[in-house]
Length: 96
Image (tube, one colour):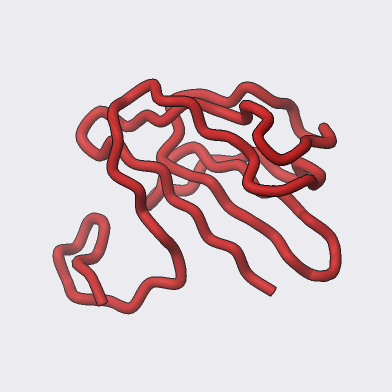
């Protein structure tokens, strides 16, 4: 349980928010395909990586991306930079 990102309501999240400074590098957690880069009104700029076997990862709260859609990435590759000045954190969600 934690406070909702914008509402302040207590909600269950299936993600991990990592507090850090704006501009910090965000790296790919595992090998995969950057399948989408999009804007979400609650999380801002996001990258979706498909890792295969039904596993996917979403990284949000980004200032900008360092990859393009349809790019293959390796674990540890730079994929973006932490952003959103009032909420400098990286949002990671891995779902089967």
